[in-house]
Length: 335
Ligand SMILES: CN(C)C[C@H]1CC[C@H](N2C(=O)N(C)Cc3cnc4ccc(-c5cc(Cl)c(O)c(Cl)c5)nc4c32)CC1
Image (cartoon, rainbow, N blue to C red; front, side, top):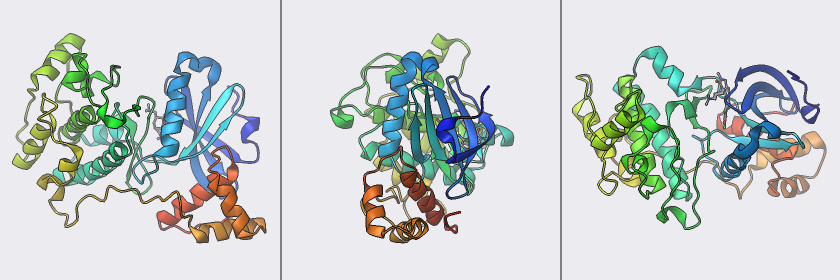
């Protein structure tokens, strides 16, 4: 397996492979200009086949969706055979493994995580998207124990905004809403709320509310909406789970009602800050200054270059990576 890619020469130093999902390989790397760690998702276009449109969708969604709880896409490098996605480093790995290692999380840790998932989903829905494949395998943990959503390969951004219904059936069955498994027309935002209910249950219990090796038995359980309520679940947790795991999507809690639900507020005196901390318009001037100084170039010229938001350029990646360090309160300088 060649682990030398000329397209990355001088831009990134490649390290170990940390995972390989079906048609992609994920390697850790160091961004040479800033010395910062990143992850690079490497795909071979010839192996992608009919999955190529899904990757294009994931890339375009991640370029638009910039949020503190969504894994940041810093750069996209494409050759005639490969696509390289340069991504925010999440050393904590998947939330799925985090739960498995602990059996289940206590209510307060589940709440701290769930508030971040609700923030990401509120932002995604407000941006006119639906994720449609929410599960702990698609949620990563960064170096500060913050959650980062990944895998927007199934996300929908229907032309008519969220109001239009989505026909395609997708995502992972155990997290799929009843209206989805019965092939009815459904709203991505409503199906996402159901998946969030399944996710919250997985955090609090360490197993799934609806599970069966037999797929049609699983679908029947999902459509029944009946699930085990272990004794360790508080009344507040059960009330919220019931509000999200409503089989009738019209009776299901909406993401805006969720953000104000009492369960999310226990121990917190502020509602979930779901708006994105990232502003595409006004650039962070001290980051621009740092780059301009290092390049011995006028700041104005650097700003104009960045504002093109050309994801294939190393300048945009450098800006994003330094901005990310600043937002994490870490020192940022150019190597
Ligand atoms: C089965 N899975 C869905 C894939 C698994 C691959 C390794 C990855 N990882 C790990 O498992 N560490 C232990 C290290 C690690 C560090 N930083 C990462 C940063 C980004 C990503 C990432 C991976 C994929 Cl497949 C994406 O589409 C996106 Cl948008 C981002 N994975 C990272 C990652 C976690 C997920």
